[in-house]
Image (cartoon, rainbow, N blue to C red; front, top):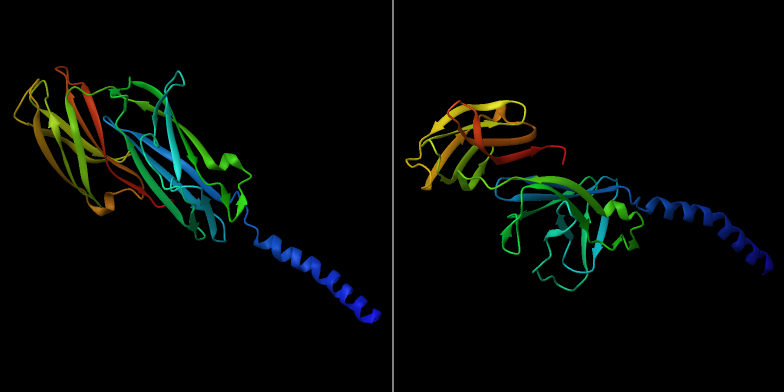
Length: 262
């Protein structure tokens, strides 16, 4: 009997290191995920795109105490809060789980119209902070808290006196842009570029009205697929020209983003 007991103990001692190694292999490296925010400040609103990606080789599951997955906060140069995503919103008070497969990513998009307490904020530099609201990863507390946050700078432009309410729709090179304009000279211009190359040369638009009367306009844009960037943004630039030919009252419009790395 003693021999049998001794044999069992020896077997357990021999197997224990292997079990420990197996458990270690199943432990997810908490640095294998990436969370960040990409703010884009347009003339009339800011767009916030948040990305969460599993860069590891195993599925990972994030646990959230409510249905709120993230928080976005914007502060001015005096550190005063001017925007918070969760203000005025209600979230389900129940635990939720989000699972990402290896190399899978998820994207969220939010917008802000530059107003705080009903008034448009001043032109200038602002800081955008994002926080992933997960409390655990695969059932374990997330030890590297900095992985849950990201901070970016953003410049909020002043209000444009010539263009307003501009919106773009479409994809893959075909877009429709609508809005209102009141050019001082009775005409305005646009170009389309991707940040490096001009995709459409300067074109003139005559909306049929002058400042201070607003007039609706519509622009159709078609770009061949081979000219579209693999990584970058397609931007339409609205503007006037002064009497001496200088570009004034510029108003960039994001038509589409292309990023094959995300």
